[in-house]
Amino acid sequence: MSGSRTGRPPVQRAVRRPAAPRAARENPLRRFHLRAHRAWDRPLTAYYLILGGSLLIIVLGLVMVYSASQITALQMSLPGSFFFRKQFLAACIGGVLLLVASRMPVKLHRALAYPILAGAVFMMALVQVPGIGMSVNGNQNWISLGGSFQIQPSEFGKLALVLWGADLMARKQEKRLLAQWKHMLVPLVPVSFLLLGLIMLGGDMGTAIILTAILFGLLWLAGAPTRLFAAVLSIAGVLGVILIKTSPNRMARLACIGATEPRSGVADCWQAVHGIYALASGGLFGSGLGASVEKWGQLPEAHTDFIFAVTGEELGLAGTLSVLALFAALGYAGIRVAGRTEDPFVRYAAGGVTTWITAQAVINIGAVLGLLPIAGVPLPLFSYGGSALLPTMFAIGLLIAFARDEPGARAALAMRQPRFGRKRGAGGPQGPRRWNTMRRRAPAARPSGER
Image (cartoon, rainbow, N blue to C red; front, side):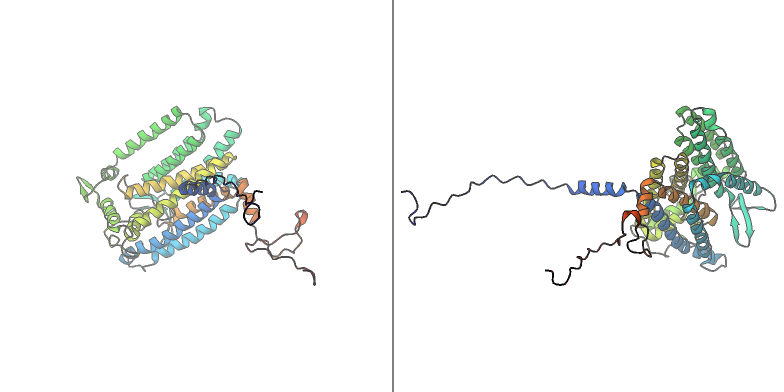
């Protein structure tokens, strides 16, 4: 009889199966890329980028205006916070405009296009009237409002061209007229040239470049053929060359590109070179807020056109890269809003505003870095100047309104509406409302004696 000595049956050992191969760990970079892609693809991404990015730029700009303008104010026998208080007042007024613009329906924005254009043309023509218009730094582009308050109507011309041009191109697209080159150019190009002519009468070529960029942005969004696009670009280029050649001041600014000495031949490159000095002395993290040396009379326009140089000196490379990242995020969000909408007006207006802000930022920062000629345009939302801040904040409100109007964003915002004050159980046809909380739901109370 087979068996063990103890009389028990032999133990049957289980046959070992080969272990299943472990799942390969997912690449951390790929996992991060997927998470970032999902985050960027959320419905409210553009909304939060525009709102948060613009507010951060404005707040950081207020801090830098206060730091960069103190010495200039004291040299003019004014309180050290003089320019900061004016900029803060303009930011408060601009905040109201931003809020109003972000809550206005698209139809009302389109209805305001022609009144804003008419008002901008009237004010820009009023600048050339003796006794009303005034000259600042050689440019006749200002109207005095009494005291120390002035307004530059050409800044509102940018907003007027965006709104009116977007409404015009949207109506022509709805009527299927953009396939004809005459309807694509007329009256957009003649009206743009009217605004450019009024600006150039005052000698402000920097603002004229921004308006030209807006015009080309609208034509590109409208799908202008390459030949048509090249023809308009050639005409604008020829006019630009003539205007530069006929002005010794503009030729001198062109000669200061890449200058490393304050005196480059016959050109005085003091401002351009000292802007490079400020950036170079900032290092990685800067000399500290308020510790700039160049703002002590060495760097002209430290709180306006060259505030980016003071930012680099006091906050270093980290501060300048942060500003660049905020503008890049704002530009990406504007392109996303323009690309995802089905409304032609929203697409043209969002594209026009994005072109305006990004082109102006590139021109200003490029001039400070010595890569472009000094055009005399401020850094949007950042530099000192209420005339530039108010229409730009209204334009940001436009982008916020368009980002909120996306179907996915509208649904996501509706789900996040506050539910306080509603009676429990009064949820309508969908059943009773529940508190939107991250806590775990407590188990239901059981009757006494139940285990």
